[in-house]
Image (tube, rainbow, N blue to C red; front, side, top):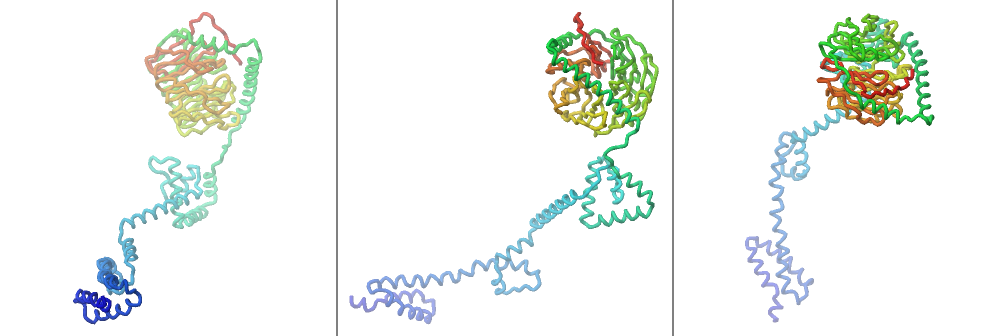
Length: 575
């Protein structure tokens, strides 16, 4: 026991010396000298046999990672050197590489060498430039008049129009061009140079250009138009007062039952049957109209000839020849037996029932579609494929009003029974209501998804019916300014619509599905289907007493539908 206590360290030091034989003797001696004076004061005699065994382990562990510590950076050293060889002033020494961080070099080299990152940056810069260009373009003032847009493009040295380019597309092109020049700082210089050239040319030419660029909201009308509007206002006030008085009397008088009148009229319409059928022409018929007393029926066809027939026997009275192209519509005057025709030769003509030509209305730039008389009988409205409708004086033949407002061809026209309003519809799927007393567009009725071909005002004063190529008939309330009913009327386009002319108790629609249908004017439910034509039904009309309906078709026939009831209930007509 005394021997072990006296020599505790030699057994532990000897194996250490043998295991580290590869190490130099000087190093082992230094380690032995360093270990011997530290252990005795810190470790108690009872635990001294175990300390020598554990003491060498921490001393040998640190030297092990020393050769491994530099291993991770050594394989990474050649990677950052490759892109740095092209850069001037770089050194290949290990000291320089140790000072610079590998992560930093790797990140900068990756961004510089990555093509994808460069492409993404270019896309981002291009998107930012486009966004700024659009913002700059939206901030620029671009003229709205198409003539002014063309003039501005000519000043900038650009083509005034491209193939198939519309007005809005041309305006957008000018906007983007001005934004591009503004970003380059050339817009003001170019515009100033052109202004100086124009100012140097002639002062009169400059004044003419400025006048041409002006786009007034109101256009100056003729004195004839002023007189016509005053006359229409006076006429419509009397008619409207009479209509309101009649409606008030029916509502306040306990003896009058409006529902019974409506049911009686619908019952009479439900008894309609084919009364007469006659060939009207050698080619398809395009229009028909009854006279104010129902004694005459006028038809027109694609041959360019209109005919007047005696109703209800349908015996021909006269033939109206004078147009050079096919006829598109015919209508009788509401005050006399004169009738007007519209043709594809861009003209409308006024006739007498004996075939005498009274007047020709010329001015449209494209073929005519429909024609209608004002309730006063003093004016005629025509629609055309030149995107306008026009108002004419019957007595003088003067064009009183040229009205634009539709983006495409104008097809149908109808006058309000009071005479204050007129409705137009066209191939832009839009129906508009105009005030003839002021010339303003008071309503724009949007709802049809295809061209609108026909329209009719109800005698009650506040209902308007429109029909179009979407196979539907829409009922509009002028008081609420919205659509009340959508009638899925036919399986093909609706070519014509017409309210019963006395009280509007029923509505008749014609369609290309070879049928005409009668609808209730109260709840717009189907009442009767008039089947008999073999081809498209193009037009229809109703006698003033509402007892007879005439239809014409592409099968070249005229068909009269009348009631079979022996009792004919007369209805008061408000003049």
